[in-house]
Amino acid sequence: MTSRPPSRLLTALLCVLTLTGVTALAGCSDSSSASGGKITLGFSAWPGWFPWQVAQEEGLFAKNGVDVELKWFGNYTDSINALSSGAIDANSQTLNDTLGSLSGGAKLSVVLVNDNSTGNDKIIAREGITSVSDLKGKTVAVEQGLVDHYLLLLALQEAHLTEKDIHLTNLPTDAAAAAFVAGKVDAVAAFAPFTSKALERPGSKAVSTSAEFPGAIPDHLTTSAKLTKDRPKDVQALVNTWFDTLKWIKDNKDKAIEIMAKRGDVTPADYKTYDSGTTIFTRQQNIDAFTPGVTSAHLDFSANKIIDFIVNTGLAQQRPSIDGLFDDRFVKAVPQ
Image (cartoon, rainbow, N blue to C red; front, side, top):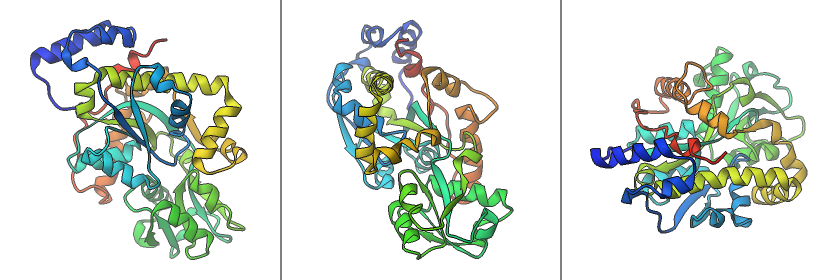
């Protein structure tokens, strides 16, 4: 997060210490907590982010007093670039890709853990390939530099292989899945719902998934550092809306699945198969994740582990600083 003048920082800290909810935040006297104007929130095809569609259709943003333009990106990379360039105010993205943006100079804040991928990122191979080791010499499609490229590299490393042992084809994730189904490549690394498309190829199977790498792929609400600095009340409203949405989904499961499946362009039956592969985080799991620690359950530990990996493998050219990246005041202030 960008630095603040001492007097403003002190005011903000006092506000955080006395927070019990969004009303308390609104009562802080610092003018930077004032709300106003529309927030553009980006999201794309991932089950852990489809609840935002429910929030929009059920009017939950408005109920929390925040004006949100929910912007859908058919290409996930475009959403990352939009946040980094300032074209949108907030985005749904992985920690891996946030760290990549930081290494390029973007000023960002992670304010919420939506979920962890626990199986919905997969490496899917054609018939006859039964393990990651069998990928040696084979052609694998993946969107280079993004989260499933990272998953692929982790899986290759575990199998005592490197990227040099395969023929990598760089394609957008939707195109990579389509190329695999068309028989143009031997395997694909992709995330849901594109995994459903890839598995349409007869005889195909997942040879590795994110379930094998706990904590490696956390998914977040990431904002510009400017938004958290200038409009904390509205950021709080976004975070509150998320947890209100999870409660609404729990109380209206069938309708929620219908909304989310439609946004993902899959059937409700297909959408239900994503449940175990995406672990949605509770408020307490958020607080635990934001707390510094020494396991992959803690964001600071995961971030440093990811940075080591992406720098050593060339996915990032320089080591980004994570000082001020993780802003836990909003999840801590969510009404219980």
